[in-house]
Length: 142
Image (cartoon, rainbow, N blue to C red; front, side, top):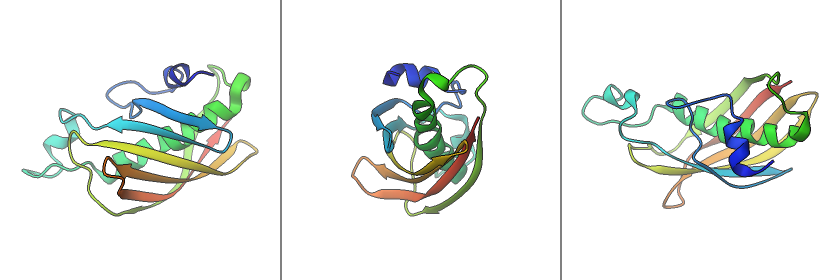
C-alpha cells in the first residue's frame, strides 16, 4: 500500500485527522509528520492566553501515525472496510509543550504484532529534533 493511500484509508477525517505525511514505513516501524494548525478549535481554551496542544491530542497523533498507520500497513491486503481499530493502552511521558503551528515528527518502533494486538514504542519530536513526548501505545486491529 502506498503512503498516500494508507492515509486515505485511516478511519479519521479533519478536524480529527492528525497525519499529514508518512515519511517512511516498513514491517518494523513508521515515521510521519503533522503540523498543528493554529486554528484548531481546542487552542481557544487550552490554555487561556497561552495555547498549547493538549496531551490527549499528542497521544492521539502518536497513535494515528505510530499504531494505526503501521497496523494498516502490516495488515496489507487483509485490511478492508470491515477492519476495526481501537486503542487499548498508552503510557506516555510528556517532556516539552507543543504550540500552535508547530510541526512534529512521530517515530514508532514495533514491539510486537500478534493476535491482532499491535504494541509500539513511540516518540514525538519537534522540528528542532527535541523529544516532546514518548512512551508505549497499544491497539487492537481486527
